[in-house]
Amino acid sequence: MDNRTPTPENPWLALRNLTPARIALGRVGTSLPTSAQLDFQFAHAQARDAVHLPFDVTELTAQLDQRGRDSLVLHSAASDRHQYLQRPDLGRRLNEDSVATLRQHAQANPGGVDLAIVVADGLSALAVHRHTLPFLTRLEEQVNAEGWTCAPITLVQQGRVAVADEVGELLGARMTVMLIGERPGLSSPDSLGLYFTYAPRVGLTDAYRNCISNVRLEGLSYGMAAHRLLYLMREACRRQLSGVNLKDEAEVHSLESDELASQKDNFLLGKG
Image 1 (cartoon, one colour):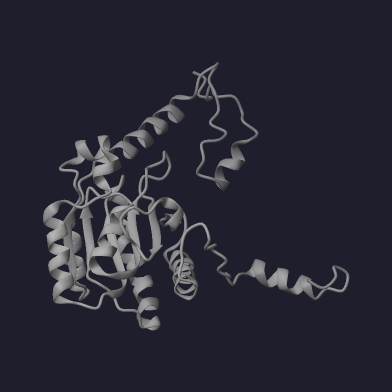
Image 2: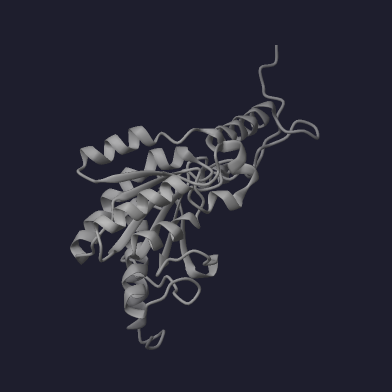
């Protein structure tokens, strides 16, 4: 019996070691190999599961409590997952009970705060479950060093990005940072997105927000994401704006930047 694979040799196969993208999958006749097709179906199932996975606010609240962080559990105007997926507008606003909760908290703590951190399930509660606490560890170290005051972390079920504007406005926050599960891809069902807004208020468009995406172990590291976010926050406080007029120009120390710096002093290349 011939045990050789029917898949022809693929000279591009070595490139698969350099990227998670679906390249050099091979072929059998005019079709994909069975293994590649099964991998695709598995990735698609993971993405669907991530979208429909319930947001475990009870577990996350308990973990935040162990870290000594107060939290508030809120809910958007979307009553359930089905309505959330069909009515994006409802995910951008809080329901009446949540609005009352925030108003009560604001009355008990007048004067506002510098920062309100909002966590929402978005389209991947899996991303929130995996990455929220590790990222917050990095972020809060820097926030405390800056001396910024923080509101309790708000956990919004069935929430979309814009719901952070209402949270920030009700709490009197100067800035908001939204941690939300991004739309799953076929190689990234657990990607966390960060959205930063200065002077949040209801009715702002995406042009007033800055986004840092793909925060996960296989993407942008927690430390790098926190570094970029802190740069945006400092610049926003200095310039009193965020969004399209605030660019991410954070300098990252690396071997590549060291090499570029040395080239600036190379007389053959000219002064930088």
